[in-house]
Image 1 (spheres, rainbow, N blue to C red):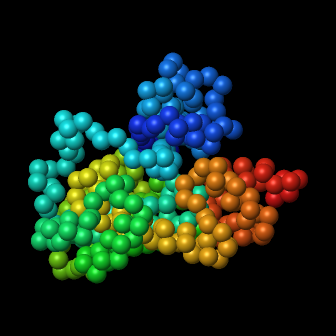
Image 2: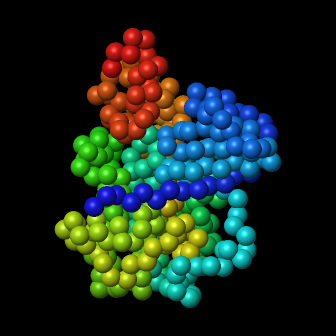
Length: 313
């Protein structure tokens, strides 16, 4: 069965100086033609970025959210749209296992999946700790909240290092890999909290439900009951928000570790800075060293090679 790709669309409102900085950053990826009223249009790692004279910048593609995150926070949905939920009434007050992942759109760093179990009784405490959509939090706040959160809620995290990712990636496309990780994290967490059973399991949606369940058939311990799916799941239940915060913290910690080992900072995302950092690693230790820190099938690898004199890797 062919993989179904879920394209993302993210819209930011940015000031002129930030749009100019973005245009400069993506100068090598600019398209020759731009839409009407646009300042520029670029294609970056499969994501089309179009900046308009109004200040609106549209990111469209598989990793749109990851790239957009480096420039700002997405604009809020209108109130009328926010009321439309793909989930049952009062779902936000159910006892739920929520799962999310971080890192699949970043060239450097691991893929981290986390599942958290949050009960109705725990919600006031989580709100007091500051648990909410991680995109609305600074990285320092995320780390601080996570340090308390891990002592409050049952959770299960799985971390796929770049080395492991590069080993399994040829066999596991990105969606199959994420299905396997989400399912395993949920399965292990269910065992942890047994005999307690959640009212529901909410997965931050990254592929259509039919596609998820199709990949699920390949798993040794498929969790198939009481599954719900919602994009931006952290907006619908604190369990997904909690999972996202723990995921992000582990991802940031992995980048810190990589930076300490290499002696220089390692960026998130998949932009030009990632190309430059990859070229620096290639120069030091070739593809073998780069594979310890980066997902080699990303286009950044070839871009980094072209930055080196003689393009010898």
